Length: 299
Image (cartoon, rainbow, N blue to C red; front, top):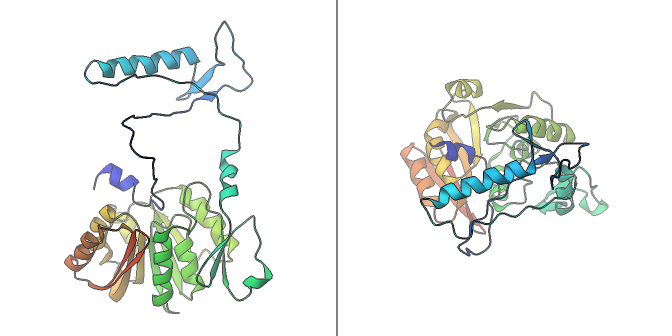
């Protein structure tokens, strides 16, 4: 598995760009030094780049120099550079205006800054604050996983949630009646996200614990998770990562355990089906929602 594939393991929502116009754009941001204005005839205030103070002119000179170096062996077209000043916005919280409560069957997913209404009485309520690093549960891939978990979770279920992110699947599994959940994630940001969402939903730490690391390649993480002790493994990950993950997962499932996968773009479900069969599993379901697919198998 390549480094890029590892970085993409726990993607929830894939970006959709505009129609290709044949032009490549590269955007990056630099930070102004606080309390310092432009000086010495410079058009820009001092900047902070890679931990060091520099000037806007120096940054521009470096960028243009690299563009010219590229021009020596390839056609870069116009190669123009545009400088803009962004507004001082609280980007960490600004996204909240776009995320509001929604339902998945009888589950109400509600952000921490909103409240349930009286007509929601009787629904399972998931309080979630995904932050900027992880998904909210709105995406088709997550909903496919949630519906599969609802079908297979029992009061005896111990769940392994690979790529747990904000902990949505683990927390809902416990709400559905599961006995225990263990999540793994590559991103250390998951530690705070899981803790906050666990507390928001009254989930005890001993019922939902988190392991940071790569369960595909790291023996220590595999041992920490435990072998042949999970009734269900859920993995909402890209198909290209599910393929190497699947033979590893068989070592963590009990005999007869259920393997729920999602994050599979339509057209790639067959490689996941074949990976499950090659690992000795029986494919039980292939479900579709939008352009996404979930494959459910049994060890």
